[in-house]
Length: 95
View 1 (spheres, rainbow, N blue to C red):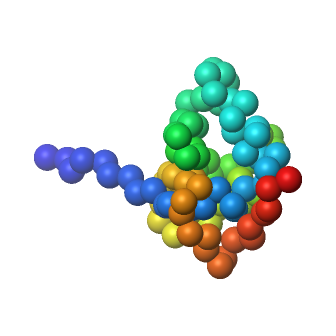
View 2 (cartoon, helix red, strand yellow):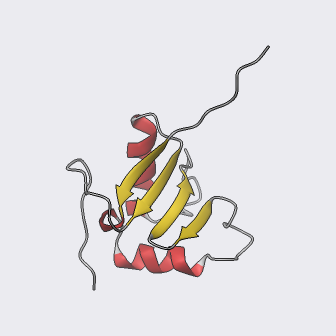
View 3 (cartoon, rainbow, N blue to C red):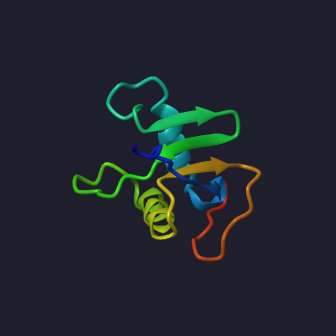
């Protein structure tokens, strides 16, 4: 008998994303090409942490968060405007 496949997520502040990346994520809402890995929430986004950025689909700041989450055992990130920033990642001011 197999066990259920459980995945973990990391709660990260939206401050770890550049304003341009936040705008880009907002623009993906409803688009078929990337919407399979991003879901908009009232306070941020829930994303699958892709392990590769071979075609540079993801902004560097976002991919750095993916890498950080994966290195810490998470398969997903919940970017939340109310979450605390972590010292290991840079933060960005709003424009």
